[in-house]
Amino acid sequence: MTANRPPATSPPVPQRPGTPEPTVVPPEPPPYRISRAQAVLRAVAMLSCLPYIGLKVAWMAGSRLGIPDDSALLDGGTALRVANGATVLMDSAVIVLALLLTRPWGKRVPGWLLVLPMWVASGLLLPIMTAFPVQMAVRLLGGGAGRPVGEGSSEPFLDPWVFGVVYGGFIVQGLALGTLFALYARERWGHLWQGRLRDLPESPTAPALRATAVAAALAALLPGVTHLLWVAGSTAGLDAGRAADRSSDFYVLEAVSLLFVVVTAVGVLLLAFRRTGRLSLRLPLVLAWVGSAEMACWGGWLSVAGLMGAGEAADRPTTVTTVTYAVQMLAGALVVTLGAYFFAERAAASALPPAENGATGACAPDSGSRVS
Image (tube, rainbow, N blue to C red; front, side, top):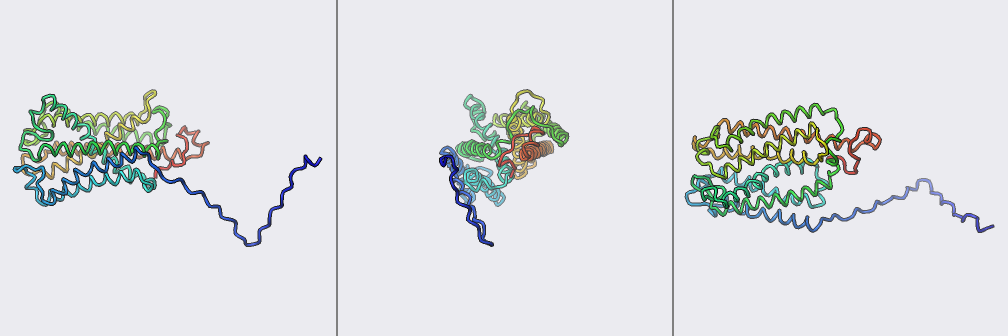
C-alpha cells in the first residue's frame, strides 16, 4: 500500500521578515549576427563611395584630376568648394547608413531617423541607376552623336572617364544599400505590409488619406505634362542654354522623370482607393516610395543645381522649370506624408490586444510592432 503513497515533499523554508526576494536575472540576449551576404553588401556599399569622395576631396584641395583645361569648373571658386564639401558629406552618409543597417545599435535608432535618409538616398540614386545604363545603351547603338555620357553639345566640363567612375559607383551604392535596407526593414517592420490591398481595414482617416492622394496625383500632372513635352522635343520652358545643349542623355533623363511621375500617381492612388483584387500591399507601397523619393529629392537637387550653375542670363532656369520642380517636390512630399500616416495607423493597429485586433481586421500583433 505504500507504493501508492505520494512522495513526501519538504515544507518550504520560511523567509525571515525583511529578507528581499531573490532577483531573477534575465538571460542575456543572443549576440547580434549578420549573414555573410550582409557583410559583403556593407563592404561593397562603403567601398563604392571612395572614388567619388576621393575625387571631390582632390578637387577641394586644388587638383585638376579629370577636369579639362577649358572647363567651367576651373572658375567655380569658393562656391564650388562649398558645394563639393556638401556632396562629400552626402556620400559619406551612405557609409553611415551601411553601418546603421548592419550593426546592433542600428536596431535602437528611431524609425524616422533611418527611413528619412534612406528615402532621400533613394530619390537621388534611383534616377542615375535607371537613366545611366539606358544612356550607355543608346550610345552603344549609335545615339548621342558620339559624345560621352554626361556631356551635351557644349564644351565638356569633365573628362569622359569621370562619368563612368562616378555614376558606376552610384549604381553600386544604390544596389548594395537598397538590398541592406530591404533586409533590415523586413526584419523590423515586415509585419506592417503583409496581406492584400483589398483586405486593408477602413480607418477614420481614410477620407483624408484619399483627399491627399488625389491632391498628390493632381500635383503630379504639371511635372508629368512638362516632362512629356520635353521628351517629345518641345523647348517650351527650357532656358536657351539647355535647349541648345539637348542630347540623347537629356531625352533619356526626361523619359525616366516622366516614368517616376506615373509610378508615383499609380502607387498613391492604389494605396488610397484599394479597388483591386488580389494585388499585394507591397506593390503600391514600393511604387509610392520610389516615385515620391525621385520626384521630391531629384526635383530639389535639380533646382539647387540650376540656381548654383546659373551664370549667364541664357542659362538661368526659367519660371516654367522652377515651378515644375517646385510642384514636383510638393507632390513627392504629399505622398511621403500619406505613407507616414498609413504606417503609423498600421503600427497602432498591430499593437492592439488580439480581441480588438481581430475585430478591426488589422494585421496581427508583433513584439516589434511600434514604429520606433
